[in-house]
Length: 368
Image (cartoon, rainbow, N blue to C red; front, side, top):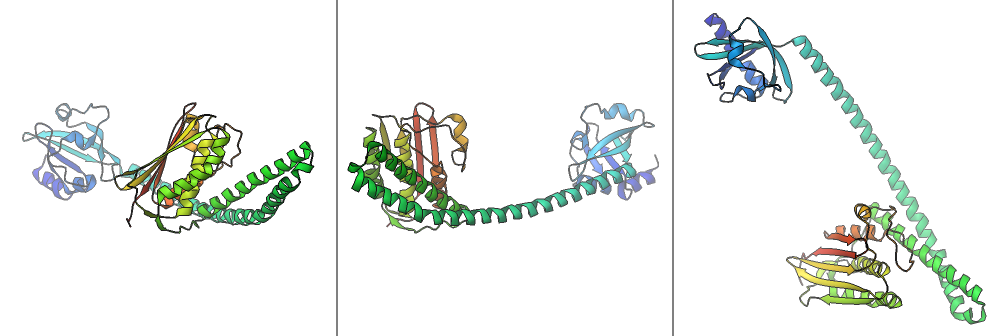
C-alpha cells in the first residue's frame, strides 16, 4: 500500500485505522478512531475495542486474505456498537485494520435514536403532568378527609359521653338487653372515635403538617406513664407487663406527646395480640449514641406475607387480636411516621405463633 496513503489515513481520513503489534496489542490509531472510541486505545488488546461475541476474529488468519473485507463492531464513546467493513493487512511486522462504516445505515440508526429520545421526552413530560395532578388530587383528598373527620369528633364525643352517663346513672334500672345495647353504643362510638383520630393523624402526616413540640424529655418517665395505663387492659387478660430500664438513660430532645402516642400504641398492640396469662417485656437501654426501646410479646405473631406491608396504610393484615379487640390498622403507620420525623428508626421481628418484637431507636442529639 502507498506510504503516503497510509500517512493520510493515519492523520486525516474519517475511517477506522488501527495498528497492532504481533501479539494483538494496539500500537497506534488515527484521530478518527480516537474520537470514535472516546480515548486513545493504545496499549489495549484489540479484543477490548472490537466487539466479538463469537470470538471468531483471528487477526493473523484474516490478514492472509487482505482482498476480503470483514464486518466488525467497535464500541464507541457512548458504549454503542458501530459496524465497519474492514480489511486486515500485515505490513512491517504489524497488523493493520482499516475500515469504513455504512453511513446510510448509521444515519438510519441515529434517526431512530433521536425518535426514541423524543418519545421518551414526551412520555416524561406527560408523567410529570400526571404526577402533578395526582399530587393535587391527593392534597384535596387529605383536606376533605381532614375536615370530615374533624367534624365527626364532636358528635361522636357527645354520643360517647351521654351513653356513658346512661350506663352509670340508669344501668341498674334497665334490663339486661337494654344495658347490652348501651354498651354496644358506647364501644362502637369509642372505636369510631379511634378511627377518626387515626385518620386525622394520617392526613396531617401525609400533608406534611406533622408538628413536633421538641423539648428535653425523660424517656423512662414516659414509659412509666404508658405502662400505668396499659396495665388496666393487661390485667383483664392476666398479662404481666415486665419493664427493665437502664439507669443511665439521658434526657433527649423530642416531642413527648408524640413519643408517648407511639409507645402507647405499640404496647397496647402487644397486649391485644398476646394470649391470656402470658407476658409482655419492655426494655430500654443506651446503645452508642441512641436510646433503644424494645417491646416483646409472645402472642400470635405476624405471618411472613404481612411483614412487608405492616407500614402501608389501609392494607388488610391477617393477624388477629386475641381478645377480639378492634383496630384501624393505622397505628404502626402513624408510629413509623412519628419516629421518622425524629430521625429515628423502627424495626419489627416476628414469627407467626411465637410472638413479635418491635425495636425503636431514637438518636441522642443533645444531653442536658
